[in-house]
Length: 446
Image (cartoon, rainbow, N blue to C red):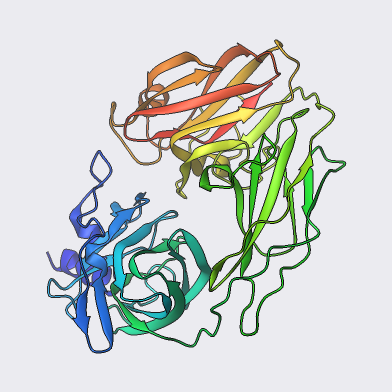
């Protein structure tokens, strides 16, 4: 009993009270708030509580056996429920206020109240977060310095443009070492941001095929009014001339320089591009249109991709995917049951959720072996994670269970499938969740 009490004290000192909730549930948690709760009037402005935000981007952090973002009680929180939101330990966590109301358009200051000790990241003394306002990223590096402990609160501020009436403000993760006790956001009129004029459209925009079977885009830096600085650029791509830029055809955001290389285009396909500048006042009109295509279709005979991870020879870093999120565990993986296993680090990260890999450049109709690498690093019972796999629209595995196939947790297993590239020389491999998230550590085509 005494030892258990000491362990409890140690966990609380690290700020990991969420671990006491027990193992992660079989399904994703749901957000308690929906982000639409009206603000509370306070001196000089309006205050919103993070407990009321719409939370998303949940990850299970195995070391604590908990889902994040999470709700943590703090006696020094300003909201009556004394609940804060813990965004640490999740790669894609978001907290969204969708009912931030102000009387007139203009610059407003967001004051975010928070607390955190170093906890499980002793070397991280300032945790970054991104801020998005009405769909536009204001910053990807708003730093929250350590406050000393999890009940000592401090504030950081950022000046942003808001529209008259209803606005949406989102705090989003840019690293797993993210902020822990998010308490409240206060919105006040005015601020140190002197930028109130939109930037000019970028000039000199051009697109050209480069020597690496990609399309290189370049433009001149946008001209900004006094007191303004371009924070970043957005790039849009369409397949028809005169296309309308939108979130659906945006291929890059938060581009910091005046060049971008599009490596995702298909060969012998004309593409049309525009670029847009962003400052704290908002978005510029888009540039004039530029067009280019990749003239030669390279032929490849194999591919090796580390799903969800960086390059680990002979596997390249994660590319050619759409959807899903990254899951990372440092578990020791048993490689003894497979032939030609990937390096252990490949199995310690993965892509999870519903996602697709599109690998192009093969000889049309050619036959290949598709090797899929897996390791179940969280669940330890049969049936806890099942999913379907299809290749080029044909389902090849139904209710696949990594744990059942490997026979153990933290043990590598490889599934080898034979398939033909489609008429354009492409393999489209799709993973669809049935129970919990699909999970893939690596994909090979030989």
